Image (cartoon, rainbow, N blue to C red; front, side, top):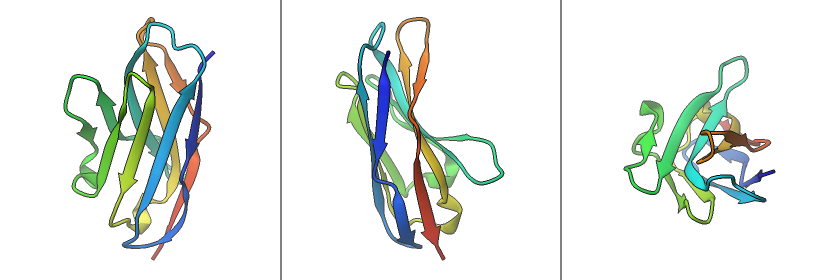
Length: 118
């Protein structure tokens, strides 16, 4: 079983920065096809923030373009999210997701909390 471990969340003032990290541990069946960050604000559905593969340009939600940068090493199953110019609406629980090559199965991390004070 693969386990994703996230870190880097915390409390920051609006305009500040945070860097989230995610690393996979265990057996990844079929290799890593893609990794992504999602977030879930209180009372809202989980939404895609950014995703990355080994062969395509990263994808970003419109709300974070120009402020967030996703990076990582797909072969090593590690991914980062650099978040700059944070806004109060960026507050939420951030989750790392890994898509495996075997049947496109997904693995999720436990989440890390980001709170942006205005």
